[in-house]
Image: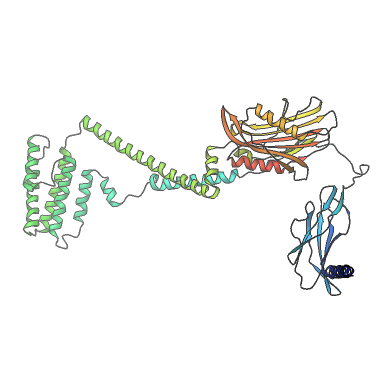
Length: 546
């Protein structure tokens, strides 16, 4: 009996627990947020917009965060629309719409999206989308052959600007040099007097002394001091006799000795009159004598006669003296010329250094250095580029120089059953810079073993002397969306029997029976080559038909 009651109690308790769980599930399901995603169409043309709607049913207190950014990849987001709100009973329905599209034909999926509700993740289902090509009616749309390359007018470069800047710098330097060194400056009065001969300078000073105001102001001491200084200086300069440091008696004694030696044959009267002038001057300077005006004029005339007669009796310079004077003048001229050249070089160098510093500050030291001393890849980056298609099927590229067709077999040849192939190359060996493009069409329309093609390419690089090759592989998409394989890494390239560190990038594209490869190599730390490589990669356009 007890056993039967226990069984009944157990069954009753179990039913009660099941009932409670059922009721809890219903209540919980009713309170659980609802998330769904829909599109307005499952089929579009390339680039056409799809309206994606994400609906969330929540309570008014729930915090909802919708996806943003490129979370719809491989679809591309065109626009994110504002959230709409609708009231459904006691619930709120939030509707978030997005405009998405795809620019490649084929089957795609709008991936499942994560919606955060009260910091809990909820996910929508993924949605398949078909993207159709734009149909071209060839019976109505005229078809034409591929146009050949045509020459175009080269765009204007900035050479004229740099020419004008250079001419401006040179003109500025020339103006500075002219005004500082070449221009004949007006002489000052002191310079003009200094350039006179000792005789002319003495006579001019005597004339200026006579016109001075010393006598009017009764400054006889100053007058006689200048009068005797004029004749003493002249005797020192032309006779080469120490006169300024001699007393009056010593000076007269020296003049008489020169007269007796017949080196300065002055008249006795001239020496006697000059001796009297010196005595008068001493009395004026030391005894405060104030001579009469007539005496002053007489003394001035005596000094003038002394200077004139001394000039007349001076012997002519010997040939050795003339030669010494010429050599001295030549030496002075040489020093003046060297000084002018030195100053010109200093100013020109300074101007060029300042101009170079300004240019370096604006453009950077490395670019300035490469502009002056040259760099093998810098002209390639700055010159006009050429866009062309190489091979059949081909790859369209923009490159600094036209790739030249080669006769050698390229890295892509992995089979003897080749229907058609082409190799094109441009290379700057001293910079380890190379752009090589190769396309192969096989006789059989078979699947291409891309890893095998890449492996063959790496082995061919090793045969060319490339060492220490590091291989990295990743998927690559051209700007137009064509898929390929990018193999890249570092390597050592042999240049003039020396290994130079560098990098390489190998782009491999394959279709049924077709391989297309683009190989680019360049040296490490070559900023110009790196920029060239980026521009070439961004210009790749794959041609998949022959």
